[in-house]
Image (cartoon, rainbow, N blue to C red; front, top):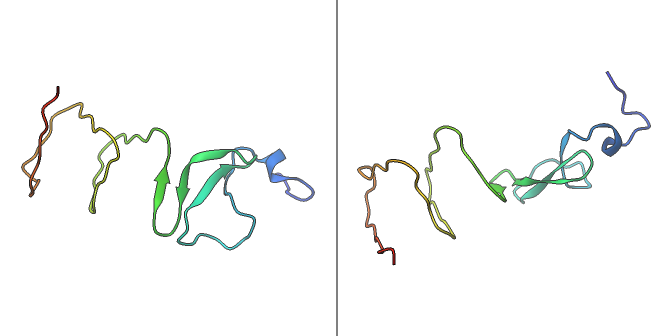
Length: 96
């Protein structure tokens, strides 16, 4: 096993994922950027309350939302949709 004594993490463990903070206080409720060991930002921020992904986010398998789902852009559906579990009003706008 390698020793860290006298070595910079950025020079030794580039595949390590770390928090982009200078203190050793752990995770709190403020979103914190994740980085590789050499300081490259990755597409995830996290806190004790939330996770935020930037760029493309994919799910291979099932996904569910137990709270409010909000989108700031278009929603594309590539398969069957079952609306029988939706209890609300749906406004469908015609495609022009």
